[in-house]
Length: 237
Image (cartoon, rainbow, N blue to C red; front, side):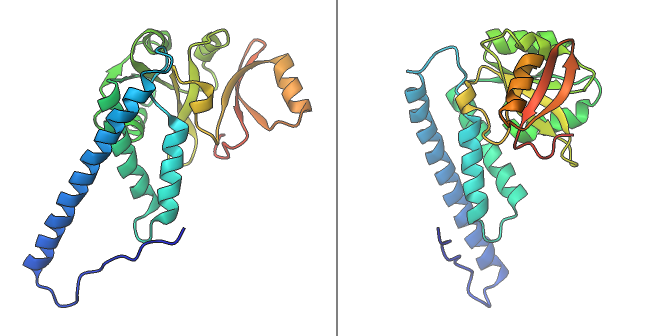
């Protein structure tokens, strides 16, 4: 889709005129953001007709929005587009449904918390969990999303093998692209991120997927269970 022409200020305008123009644009931006919030409220009413046990979060839809706008951006850097719209979508989610972000991150608390804040926006209340099990329990029974620090030596994810309510629907990464935390919540599989799928598989299931040609990478092992990430997570290490 062709990009709309950007209306640049006329040459030779003085500082005060340019600042007035910035104020006008800021007012328009605020009006549009509040219109977006109103649309979000209408969407929440539609989602209310869906299964009550699911959160109203739609990670795949969010990524589609960001990808589309990143391609359209002419001057705005992609990380800035992502950060701005993550903040907008986080505020919209909280307007639809107050959702707590429950974090367990004993080894890298600053990194994981900062990345969670970037992912879910400043409007999201953040709560610390003493154990992964506590974070998962809150995600299972309350309006909450669990963000749990990831280590190949951890085994908390085994609990999800028989859990039909919770899904690992996204992850947080450091600046090198390494996974530092997994995001778990009551999000239906069809609404999870499209480019990355996290699965807890038995050895038999893993072999069948490999035989069928699925590109699945093992992240952690516990007994005969494996935490795997599917094709699309090129940065997983």
